[in-house]
Image (tube, rainbow, N blue to C red; front, side, top):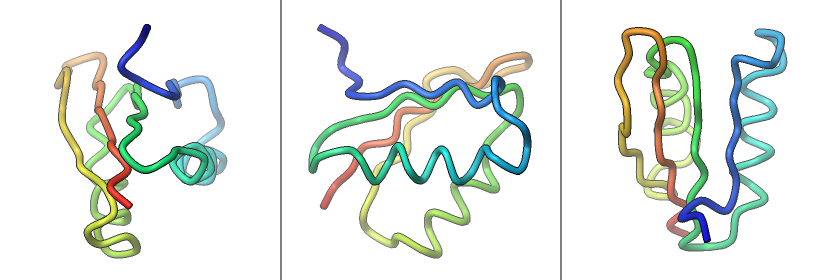
Length: 78
């Protein structure tokens, strides 16, 4: 069994669709579940957006930090 309840590879989406899809996936998680985010660049802007909009609601952990692939574990805390 995977440690992730959801996995999203945003490299497969158009830029305008990436953040909405990520937020939709995060919203679908239950408290304590994690999603894996896969991207082709550091998703730091997403981290800042989530920090501003969902303070204290998630835990962010880099699993892989480039140079070609970034993987992040995002855990839902509430």
